[in-house]
Amino acid sequence: MFTLAHLSDPHLPMPTARALDLLGKRMTGYLNWWRHRVHVHAPEALAGIVADIKAQKPDHIALTGDLVNISLPAEFRRAAEWLAALGGPDLITVIPGNHDVYVPTDWRESLGLWGAYLAGDGAPVADGFEAFPTVRRRGPVALVGLSTGVPKPPLLATGTLGEAQIARAERLLAETGREGLCRVVLIHHPPLTTESRFKRLTDAAAFQAMIRRVGCELVLHGHNHRSEVARIAGPQGDIPVIGVTSASAAPGSKYGRARYHLIGIEREGAGWRIAVDIRALSADGEGCEPDGRIVFQSGGTVAKAA
Image (tube, rainbow, N blue to C red; front, side, top):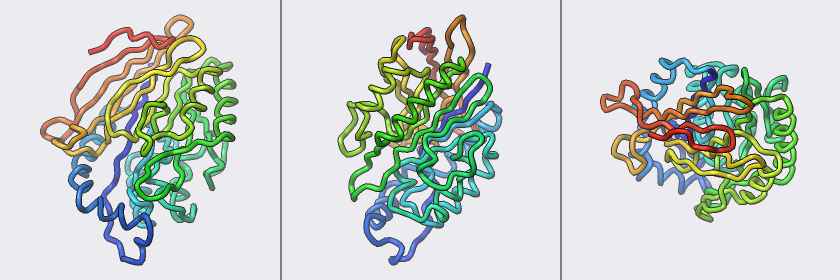
């Protein structure tokens, strides 16, 4: 069995910043952090999640965005150090979230610092958004990474893939499907048409149309800071779309305890069996405990839920 740990939205602690660094949209995000979000995202909670992931020793880790908050250069440097402590680029696949692209930045001083974690197999270190979509083959799994991060006006947390990225993703999914791999799509924004217009994926309908044509086995996302399950129709049945709670959610926050998902993937007949174990921060904060399980079979059938 191949095990994939999925975490998202760690929102690492905000560094202090000068007024000059906060011109435009960054100012509202900075104030919002110190007034509200600092109480929602706890570094101690994230440390407990990380400790449990390391204890579980998954085959790979998928991180679906929002490592930072308002895209300050100091945030990207801190996040690069945090990633290095979590593991190397071969072990971890990262995609950007909307907070990682909060405002336009110099790639070399921002996401470029994580370029090796963003790049696909056989590709050079990612040097721009043109690197997406990416594909990484790990055992029986193909991880297809998408970027929905596009700088948006204040008060908007929407994301956009764009026609070119969707078309390239379709080709990658078709190719890895022919190889017989379990195709796992990584995307920050939920690719659903039911989301709030202020936080939604603007071209979710186009993404869903592509998935109906080519299919995949699983879609993983973040953004909503909640563990949740939805479905998208695929060519051979419904495809599970699974979101995860923020990995730094403080106990007692509106999102509940911090969580991550430990996903077991194995062949079953001509298809796949996918078991999602939800791991929630324990009361002592030193690790995690089981918080439910959902098992899917090829075609989106729920085999067992607890």
